[in-house]
Length: 180
Ligand code: GDP
Image (cartoon, rainbow, N blue to C red; front, top):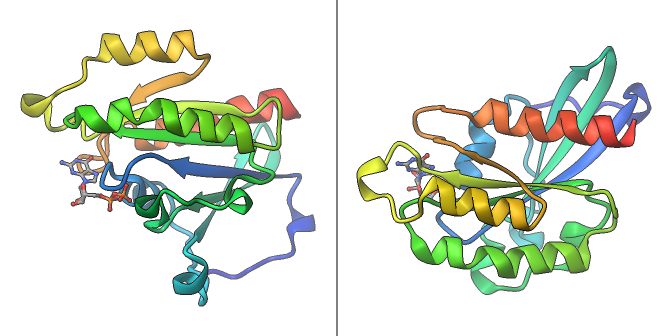
């Protein structure tokens, strides 16, 4: 069980959200990245999980509060509260599921409508890169989409632990550079 410390002991607290269709690997990506986790006891009622990752970035203490939808996306009814105050997002699809890539624009729209911070940074993530044989979305296509929409982009594998830490850290470093 993680100790919940006073947030004043951090120089920066960033709220990040993870969105994307159900089954793309959001929970597993978070699980890979974060060691210091706690679940709200009331998770089943509010349908949200908060995960904490503490990092040192350029000698500053940064606390990333990363929110996972805890399956709420299945019902297409993520509350505004989920997005409120967020300064960054991981927008995840599954490289083997064309539909999950097609769904990206809806998520992006929802992020843009609901996000509080105008300088918010969004990283597009093509997860399950280990399943190359079943690939349904090329890197080029995703890169092109990211470029057109002002997103960062990376492919990851939560299973093989490829690029997971790099993706989260790149996002956090970029937010740090923008907001510090
Ligand atoms: P979520 O609904 O977006 O939170 O997705 P989950 O994290 O629950 O993962 C959905 C399914 O995809 C599970 O069966 C995972 O084991 C699987 N999965 C998640 N990430 C990967 C990955 O990188 N590679 C492969 N092959 N499977 C993955």
